[in-house]
Amino acid sequence: MVQPWLRTIVLASALCVAYLIGVIINWSNAADRSLYANLGMIPIGLTATILTLRASRSQANPRSRWAWSLVGAGLLCFFAGDVLFFVYDNILGGSPFPSLADAGYLAYYPLAFAGLMCFPSLPVNRRRSTMLRLVCFVLVLGGAMGVLFFFLLPTLQSSRDDLFAYALSVGYPVGDLFLLAGIARVLMRRLSGLWSSAVVLAAGLIVGLAADVVYGYQSVSGTFQSGGLPDAMYMVSWTLFAWAGFAEQAWDRVGHRAKGGSHD
Image (cartoon, rainbow, N blue to C red; front, side, top):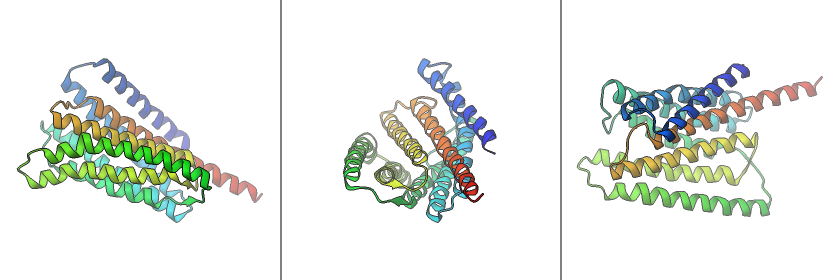
């Protein structure tokens, strides 16, 4: 079953590259870019969600199974938000806030954070641990400053009459800060299993976090247009999630074959 999924993920990646090129050359009009962005998220997001959940089913370690299951559940919620946003924006002709799409998006953060906390780890020597801590400190500090300056502070300073909508607006940057902590944990520890899949997963989370910051800044400044840079970054994030799930699943199949061969 690996080969069919490899073809699927290659096609999804090609779709992502095509959309990135479209954003760079500023092709078509704003309405068409919005449609292509919202519609393009759906097959890529579905591929990433399925591959991540399939990776969880193949784990022998219970903690790994829980980790990938929770991350997959978070991606499923985010995917549901993308589908609902497409319906609101491109079928019903409006993008209300708050909406059911926001419920899906916000549910992604605690589930993904819980998944990151569940990844099992192995002992790390002191020198490597110190270096990783320094790198992660810089990552978290820089990311937190970006989230606070470009997203959280403008949100807190904005005038909103709807307390519920205001609370939801704050929920996005707060969720990003939690994900930063989860990413730092993953990068600081020597994870059991395939390290590369965890790194690709973390890269997808970081790109998605950066997309949140850009989206938040453009929304507050009134310059956001659907189909622009934030959507391109979300699409890249989805593609990285898909590759992480595929790599973990492919590695697990190779590991089972090796174990099976050792008994012959």
